[in-house]
Length: 605
Image 1 (cartoon, rainbow, N blue to C red):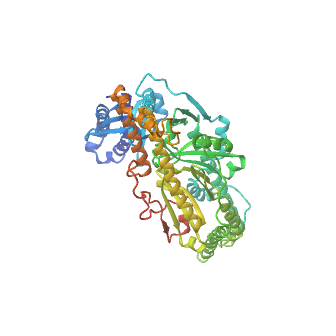
Image 2: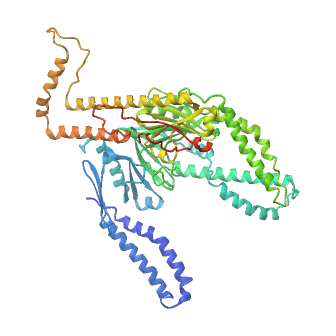
Image 3: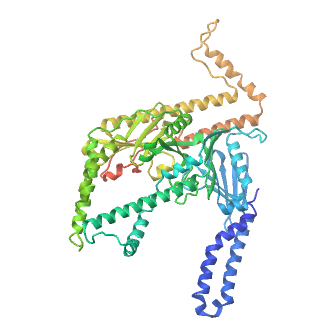
């Protein structure tokens, strides 16, 4: 068994004790001294000292009782100071191995290792902290053992550089990025600071008039846009500084970050969804972002999984590149190109325009009602001037929506300000759900959602075909079910052939011509199979068992990914009860790009 780095004791103790010691010191030397006695003078220092010693003692015990080991089949972790916990994580279940280092950790030469499995709930295993060299060794060893390579002397797979972000491209990433999480903060700051600034600046603006209100709104809007752009620029530079994406065998490995440095691996065979994302600025200059999703990344509010996406649950395989380059990598990874999309019916453009116009109408009524209670008159009619904009917005939303059925993938496209085009392999689909709100029933359209096992599905990011004809929705749902079964059958057959090849069994060729003696060709195949026991006897039994175990493990893994209850048994009934039609009385918000969808009864999940 291997222990953590000894430096982790000091680092964790300082990390844990900083806030506690500060709070105790603040209390002891401010309010605590008023009580005198034990809390005054030397007693305050003693209280802080006891806290530091207790934290240091706990971290030392944590270090001595934390052990891990890389066995041929599992990563074993034993931990716990007061209650012991033993974990065995099979390599076939590990989706991602991420290494993170902040500035302080880089200075002392340690790193945190996170192991994500196909659950998406939380990090399955975390090593805090080991040396950086040990972290890279764990990452490469896990990848090697997942490939079934038990020979430690085998050469490492060649590294192929797929993408590297140059300083110029990094500046473009920042220039085209906006962080819209700050408008509320900017609004509070602006509403407080504007009167103060106005008292020192002599601006000839007539007070108490429509012009003054208009100038204030425009100034606040510009301030929000400026701060959001500056925050987005800084966030993009910090997150994607030094970004590199390489292919190592059957994995994608990335490295990025300025203050917090990340090294991670993305198994190609574990990809759930590829997403090409852009916005009006990126489309204007011909750029796009590629996001990859696996079943291992969990939604995280702090980005601890290395996604840097604020809990999105996905990785930026390419933060920014030309659109052709991004689509070229999609074709390289999944063998699919951008298709021709089927858009919603043309009448839906009116629906979108009416919806946006209703929003403007509600805003107009709210401003008109506010004039009854406010001493200063508000220009309540301003939102009505945006009605032509609502009509254009409805047409743009219709234009950028659609779906397509490629040979091996479902491809959907949604959004205008943040347009996302998702590529989902058929065999990755878990559930197909058809939904109609009360408003969609009125327009005779439905929404079809293809749910996958990825973590984005947990927060509402599935591939969705929105507002399509009811008949087309039913056809799409049935087609997805059929292609899912075909894709699973093809993968099962490929695994069986791979197993036969590993055991030295030659499969029968049904269309082989009969031999001269008149016996059917299958006799040769039977003769070949009859020789199999002799082959197995000559081979090493342990090797044969390892091959069978690996094949069984692969079958189990695919069964978990696709919710198959018995993939090897002969099907006596259709086990794929995938979609039903669900009618909902929810508002139109349920059909937006961020909808998650309620699970219908009997959807097979």
